Image 1 (cartoon, rainbow, N blue to C red):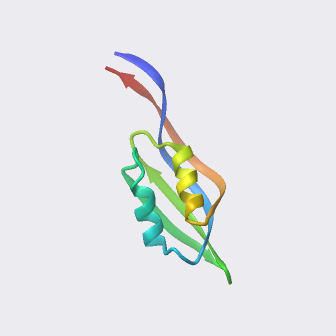
Image 2: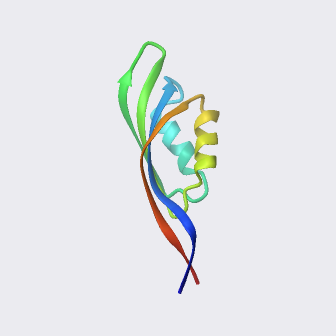
Length: 92
């Protein structure tokens, strides 16, 4: 067994989003990205025009570029990466 580059397995993001789309649509859209197995979105704070949410993304090989693009396409912005879990990829 040999090891290759690392893969992101879990990431927690602090995100600022508009009221629409809903957190349900937000999670569903992100789950459709290849390499992502599940997404959890937690509402942290509601302001007049925006919502602050924590997004937990879990998968075998989370592509942060695609995640960021998906979030931005939904009209939101990543404030911070609050947690990340990375593992070595095993090459068969």
